[in-house]
Image (cartoon, rainbow, N blue to C red; front, side, top):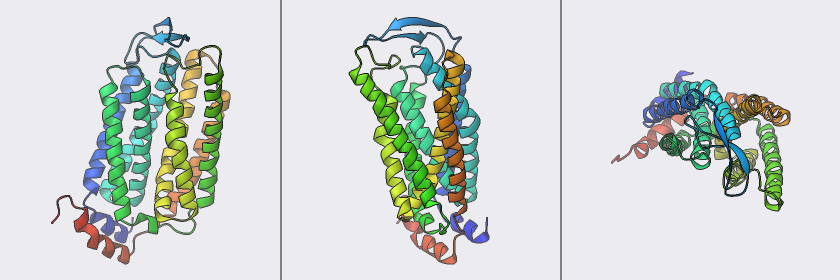
Length: 317
């Protein structure tokens, strides 16, 4: 990092606290993921019938007891990805934030988007169990972290530091394309569930939580961020660079989830594994280009941040 950039970040009073928060979230996510992988039980299950008339296999042991066996298999794959990829990445990003890296702040923001979605889904979809308080803590802390990093990135004027080579069109095409694919996939499943004579495939749940989160949260966000980035709005560029990291980790986690489910249930899942693996690889390429287009801070940037610094300090006079 250049001396100019280092000087800029040094004058951001929120950085140490946000770095500590990101590090704490990484540690807690590591604990949750490790328990999901190593305390998942011995694989015992019973066959039950849900209140909706759906017959399924329910796990009876481990921290994910009382969930459908297929859901547990998918969750363990997601936990492995979180433990091996997301947690180390967030720890490294937290160190980078503390040292004053703007790119690290963007990466940390994107990874907090990942932990927010993951543990919001876990808290809402998994059967109530011993990890519920940890799930709620993690998604609440992720919300706080996202707000804090949003303030930091806005105050440091990151949106004005992206070069013309920022891949706006590539990101928009990838983001909108995957959003459209998700919309078609989930709309089809919802239509089948609503029109089925037999019980819809809910795996013991009472509603489609994942579909609700994707269609009600991820798809609208993807479209809004893509359009804002296309128009070169500073906030849109920042959001795209951060959300690209969320996109990569979510795609990779879903591919890992489907591989885990295939291993446990012996039900092939080639198509979704290929789709989300390709999406992950393309996301990596575009995200690297977005992050590399961020240029060092100028003297004018430093002067502006220094003039704004008192307003960023809590309780500043």
